[in-house]
Image 1 (cartoon, rainbow, N blue to C red):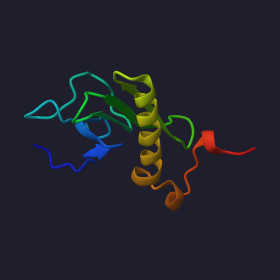
Image 2: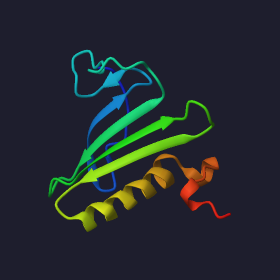
Image 3: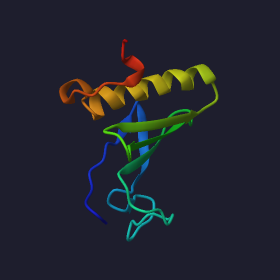
Length: 116
């Protein structure tokens, strides 16, 4: 197994898989851990996370922009209650910025939070 360190949870959910195309790693495909899909390498990581209690889950994809100095993210969720999933997605996005990316320390700005 490749010796990689990735976060183990986000928004109170357990991360159950990681696909890191930057280095060609898929945690769900032992023993060589290469990604299943024949996708060209790029700066992209995808996390799948799931609640230990109710099956609520998310998919979080983080990638760099090919044309601009940006980090982009895409997050989707599923669960029984729309309101709970919406709240979870807000928590995931906040944790992604504040904890994972350390947005303040690194001078990162969420375009949705820019005041013009």
